[in-house]
Length: 431
Image (tube, rainbow, N blue to C red):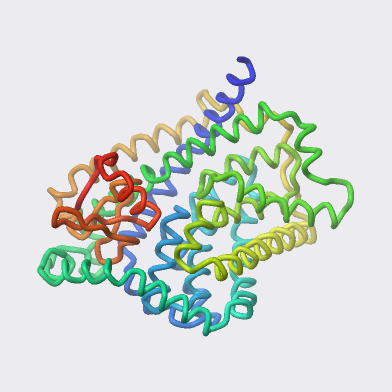
């Protein structure tokens, strides 16, 4: 019982230490999602030139950090004409180059890891740009696009018909998100939509966050140090580093913890003895967890998914290894952590407690905006995914379903399949 108590306490204090960062990160993400046009993203990603890949990275950074939503949006952009490599670069940036991830890494295991996230993430996108077009030919990508669009024709046609009959507010409501972003930035409607993104993103990732902190607490307090030492090879220089960066993504594949929820587990792995580069490659590997691999298979087919797994794994490992040696060359030493001490008791009158209470007050204001957005004129262009709770732009849903003459919007096919399997189990329905 003492071990269980220590594990849960570790997980709780990790959460408490990062609470203000989560509110700040999701708040910023919600604001950017509300004010950046999806149409602009689609138009900007038509090829794989370096400037286009840079744009893909920027658009990814300002998008949701949910792995499932990132995969769905990348699929949608690709299906509508975005270059395959640019779409995948966007997907990686949207889960690995986001503010909340960097802040949580900084708080849990040190600023060095936050810096490594951005340095290694940029390296990984460069590697994807160099490798992916040589592994996936233009002909293969075009064939995947044709099959992807063919599989969604019925769904897209029904959605277009729904818009044609005037049910889509975006087409003719002058007070909606078609307004210029500067005008929306000065309106309560725009900020209430931003609040909707913040609240729905937190609701969408609540399971991943809880699982991540609980698993990390047990991995740090309950798993003996000898187990980690036997798993992570040390003392062999480059070869130890290589083994660790290859092992990191494998642990991500089998852990099922994706998005920002894998950061607490990364802290536990660092406490257990994995190398600096191994932690970096593990954090990047949230996009190759087993559930996501199954989703890629449905999007792109088995053959292309196998190629994506090979390219993603290789680029994650190489980026982690390169980041580790770049930091060594720059004399940036990673922080030291003693096994069993990741979850620290940070309660008391200190900056963490003050920032957490400020964040809770700010979130109360965000939630008030969200609850009153109909009164402020917001929400007309958005629906709520009835499965995960994510706010979905009706003009660019990850998937749709049609029941009883109404359209139900989803962030991804993953959520739509859950809904279609048990529609009665999800109370939040229809926009």
